[in-house]
Length: 386
Image (cartoon, rainbow, N blue to C red; front, side, top):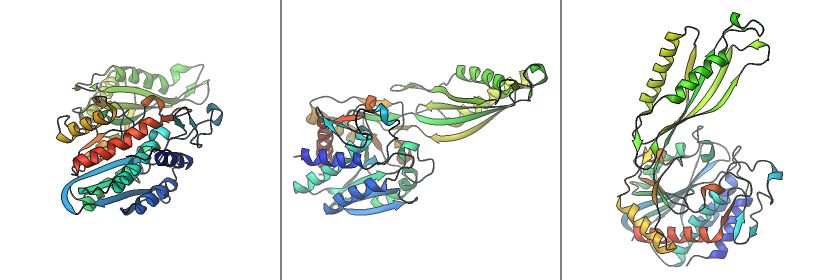
């Protein structure tokens, strides 16, 4: 049986360790997790590509052969933002009416605590895995790990350490529903080059803001052909724009960044080619249209067959624990599942908490939700590794 008091105290301890990213400093949380799991008898391996920002792999190798289950979470959080927007200290772990408050309580220190307590519960029960149970705690998830010091750094090393991984369970926020499909993220930067002129004589210049604006309007209309049964269509969102430096100067430079979310089946290179073609068409019709495109970040989409046996086993486990049939669904955002899928690791997402509680002031998570998550991890491990 899950030790509720121990779970609550560990969640509070993790919240009180500030791992706001930037700068991260995930070592403060990693040390807590490593201490608990080493005391439980797990083998610990540390993968560190940046000082103070480790990735922790804790391994419980059974005495007999069987499946390998990897449960994953990230140790960093977004920053708390202005202190005055919080009713409580964002790093207090304060408890009110069955809710634990603090930055990272939902995303995702409550889940990290649930994973550790699940392992400790299994140890206390005298259970032994048939195969291998491993926990992976990563740094830098909240920044997409563009620096390749977290998930992108450790993912290629996992099969060497664990062999074939039969199921990866990412404990990110789903309300204990099961996410089997995620959109990919393609971030593009567009730069328009124009010609400066005095603001009173705009006909002597080429207004980069106007040119870029005209292009972005057409880009927003560009159809993306793929459609997904869970996620619908891919999306284009224009999210930053800058240009000019003085009201009476025609701007010679303007920039915008665009967030394109690609459903499984949408080809990134075809999308970029279509955008390049749009630029060419607009330039052919307007010689003063000078637009450059640059790829800033890409994370591929991810999908695991909803009919995989372990997906059904996980759904049955959630129902037994909570009394509710979990929804098997898609996710418009990204948890990094695609990074592990690229290594041949089948990944699904199932963790406690509500999306609406993430990245907001007075973030909190219900104690009953993290208790349920810990119980799900215990029961699924027993089912998958017995």
